[in-house]
Image 1: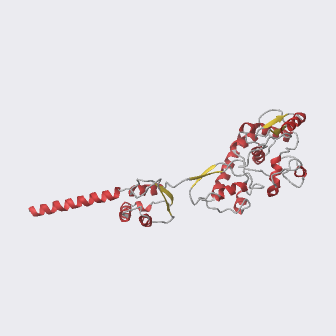
Image 2: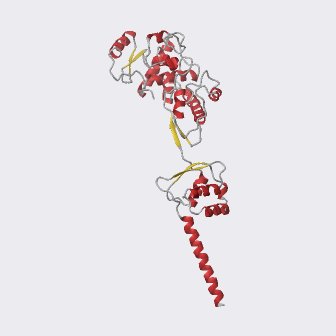
Image 3: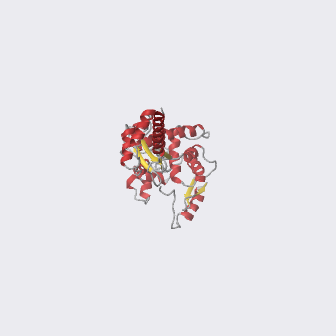
Length: 341
């Protein structure tokens, strides 16, 4: 009887020791240093594949224990694919929780106001973590998405967008299109009375011009007021950014008198009345709000001071004085509109 008791005691001690060893191994942090380990779980990866890959990298000391635990608990069936940052100090159980919650690494890209669609696509193409699927501004998917409009230009909201590795430029622009529709609807519902616009799209066209004319937030409403009053009086908008947009890749940075006289350029608001055919850039919410809520006043002209701001005038005589003051004696760092992003 005594021998049996001793044997049972020895077995209990062995079991207790084994349990303690298993617990120690389970609670042992993964071999991760620095800011953490970037690790990608591919679609369809099993826990076994993940564990073996981490073991092969020298990160996970006991892959079998993780695999067994996942099977016994059923937690191996709910892992989410994506790119993860595994922080130092993470245990095997902590890794499982991370993969189950799908806490994948988030990236972000900012599309600034005032870019053209082509410039926005070039910006997205520089994001190494974004998959490039679109073939320029004329891509058939963009054309299909914006089929209700004359052009895709201007129909994507410039904003900061978050995404995960493996997302595409096409996904970003689809979100930007939906966001622009929402902003247009909201701002159109809050528009001032008596505006010379029949549709939100016309307001979007003017907003894109406002966006390219000034980088000074406080001027947007006053710029909008000038353009709205000119439209109401049948005056031509006579704004350089529309001419430049119409010149496309042929524009070399020097706007000439011949460009302003060119009637073949349908965006030449010196020769053609009303709004240009399409937006000329991606306007932000503030520019759209300004177009639909122009500041009151009597100014019909403005001229760049050379620092990004403008001098506003109600008469042609006052405007010509401002032109002589600011245009004929240009400072070295002169600029008439926002700096190119």
